[in-house]
Image 1 (tube, rainbow, N blue to C red):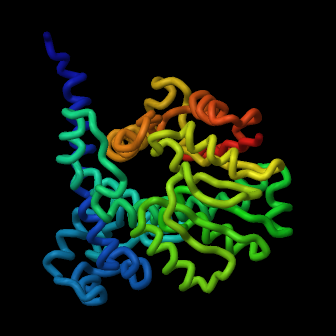
Image 2 (cartoon, rainbow, N blue to C red; image 1 turned 90 degrees about the vertical axis):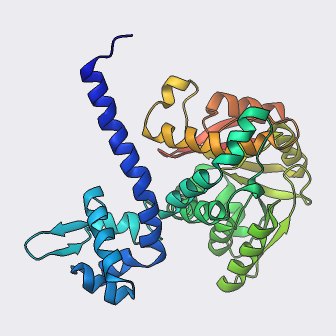
Length: 350
């Protein structure tokens, strides 16, 4: 086949950008771990050696790190003064863990994907799964850090108010289950906002439950607890059940939906937060879809295939398929309540 020189040049240019981004990921983790970004924001503009001194790191390494980060556009460089600095936008992405655009957590997820590539490559050959618990530990930490700011920005202010009657119940005092809670970021946000309600976070991953309990203790919250349980057998009866970015990871999401239905009181509500996606593959061929499909290949589909049924919805299941799964679990009223560029919030009622 003849090679089109212009198309080849464009593709090579794209590959250079992609390889540069992939290699910069390790440097982002270094800057995050060693507080190079936060030091630069708090004390900058700084010469590289000054940044090294303030962050208690080795000057020669920091000089190279700064040059690489400036080349990536992640920090700024002024050639006249030989000083590095960060714009407010760069600081929001790399130095503020409470910013809804904070990205180091996503770089941790990417690092886990690279470290776990041998396991997933083997799964490609066998068709077997790779359980969530089998991944590198930075996946669990990165997932919490990446998703928490988005939940903090949207959950209390817009997602819950989009569900008729739910906020009023929570303010009066309701019993709530947060299933697949991970390290408990979503559970803690709700428990803090609605002190009259009681919350239980369920997850099958014991290390995440242990971290969640620690976070709850540090926050001094008394209206929640965390328990290890699967999505198809968590105990109790609830006014409100929430699944945050986890239904697509489950081997049997229809079975999970059926169990939620049994656990809900007659006037209860199930909120399902899932990654945003169109119903067709071509609807998702964009930068967000690229990230989600990649994570789905390495993390979400393997997780589902490691469990019973192994439906493997994937992160880009789309509204139609998600609603179909929920209705097969017995729910009769299901709708998209609200969406963001990254999430779709579904409301399900008996």
